[in-house]
Amino acid sequence: MYEMTRHMRDAIRVNTRRAPLYARLCDGRSWRYSRALIRSERMSLPATFWFDLRGNRYQRRGIPIVAEEFLDMLDPADFIETFPEHIDFRQSLRKVSLNTALNAIAAANGKGDWPRIITICNEQIDALADQPHVYRMTRHLLESIRRGAAMAPRHQERAEKLGVAAPTRLSRHLIWLQVRSIPRAQSFDEGAAEVQQMGVPFLYYDLPTIGTDPQTPIYMGQST
Image 1 (cartoon, helix red, strand yellow):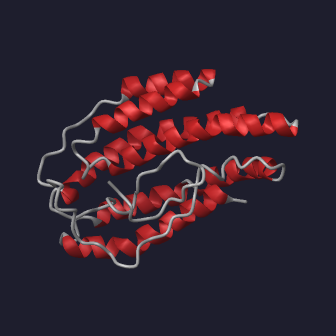
Image 2 (cartoon, helix red, strand yellow):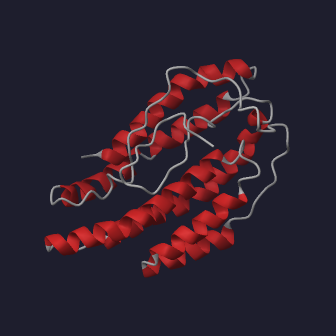
C-alpha cells in the first residue's frame, strides 16, 4: 500500500543525502539542480498520495496497480564519483525534441493502445543512447511510462479474472501524469548537463534502467 508515495519519499531521501556529495565534486555547481529536484519531488507528494488512495482500492482486491509500477529503490553502499570509462562525458548535450512523441503517446494512451506507447518510448530511449551521461530524468520518465504501459494489460487481465472493473482509467491517468512531467524534466536535464559535462555523474547511478518485467526489482546504482 502507498507504494508510489514510498517510492517518492525514498527518492527524496537518497537525493538529499547525495546532494552535498555531488556539490563537493563540482565546487557547488550542482546545488541548484539538487535543490530543484528535491523541491519538485516534495511538491509531487500530494499527487502520489492521490494515486495511492485509488491504487490501494485495487490492491485490496488483488490487482497491484500503482504498486508494480513503482518498485523498491535501494541505493548502493558506496557513492561513485566518476562515470564509467566508456562514457565520453565531455561531449556537448545535443538537444532533442520530444513534442511529437509526447503527443503520440498521449493519443495512444487515450485509446489504451499500450503496445504503441511502448514502441514510442523505446524509439525515444534509443535516440538518447548516444549521450548516456545527460537527459537522465527524461530517460527515467520515458522508461517509467513504458513500464506503466506494460503493466496496464496485466492489470486488466487480473481484473477480468477476479470479476471486478478494470483499472484502465487509473493506468491512463498515471501515464498522463508522467507525460505532462517530461517537458519540465527535459528542461531540468538540459540545465544539469553543465555539471555532468564536468565529469560529475549527477543522477547517472541514481536513476537505473527501468525494465518491464514485474518481478524484476529496481536497484539504485544499476545503470547503463
